[in-house]
Length: 246
Image (cartoon, rainbow, N blue to C red; front, top):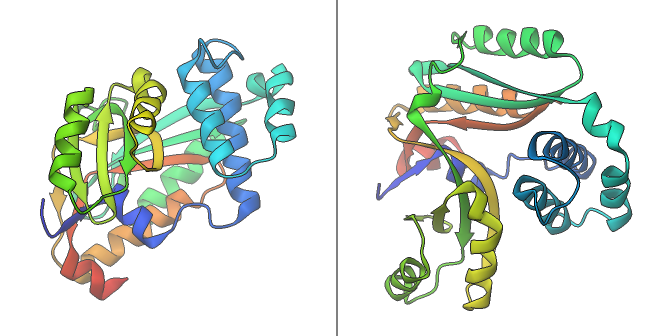
């Protein structure tokens, strides 16, 4: 995919995710609460989703006291519900929206409104998720000897690698994300970021600047919704087009 950027890379390049510290901490707090409820308890040693959520909070410099308060407050996990939405955005791109909400009816109507305002539509469960694979992804800093780097990462046991503009994406099984990140750090690799993701199996390439701008505006609008935790889309935009609209 040389000369192109998929949506996950574009989000990192644009820096569109949670620039406001307060909003970032709010999303991270929700992620910890949801992980406790969905992943099976408040022990990160036995709940890999919780470990990832806590590690992400620490990376973002969330105060330790904040994290401990969430872990101790069991009712915090009960108050929120994890709800995913699937649909089609501009140009027919496939989109998955993960939310943490205390009112699924309100959130559902608001997400539906964002889709419809863009000319897209919500769809039922499974409508687009078949085109995505749950994965853990670790972004590793690229060095001059990137080919040697990638071979070494493969030897360590990576499922899949992808070179991007800002690093090397390393894909592993979701439950192995924390363990594999530790292995990479132990082998001397510099970790830029890590997260649980939904990796598209097939991409929709948008080469028209106006259409690409509309698609990114739609995705940014959804991402900024207070209840939205993560947004995944299968768009792919050539670098020369992205440079003109950034």
